[in-house]
Image 1 (tube, rainbow, N blue to C red):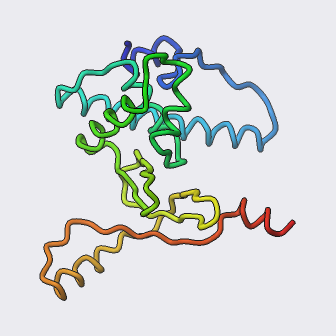
Image 2: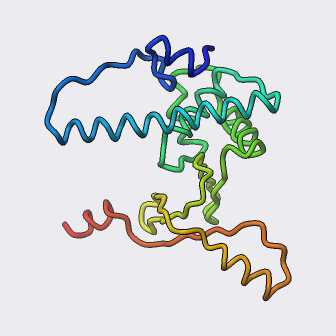
Length: 187
């Protein structure tokens, strides 16, 4: 397995091992979309490289399955379940099982690379974006989307003052109906 830096030097995408292509021409909108896509890919690749470094520093061996699961998580905003990850990768790894996915997710959680999101529906979702952000969840289809809002640290302080707890974190979620479900119900 080559490092992301070595793959980049060779012209291979760090996430797919496919040769990257140079974009030539196109409308302003196509160029803008391509630029945004390249910027997102650069961020994902940088996060993946940081995650790989952290695992290496912690003495965690990188297997092909572990790399694929981590790459998948770093490259998606869909907050997949373990079954979603398994279904997305099972064709590439005949020996991979759902247990393999769960075991690797536990490694990533313990290493501080992934957070587990539970909603009382017996199905955990996983988020590799460890930045401070919040989630909106569709009450119809279960879709989860990130949204940014200034961190609510003042609420943590208020909770500490009122309860005497040593607050370590908080979680904010909003619930409603996503655009897709609203569009379906309007037709």
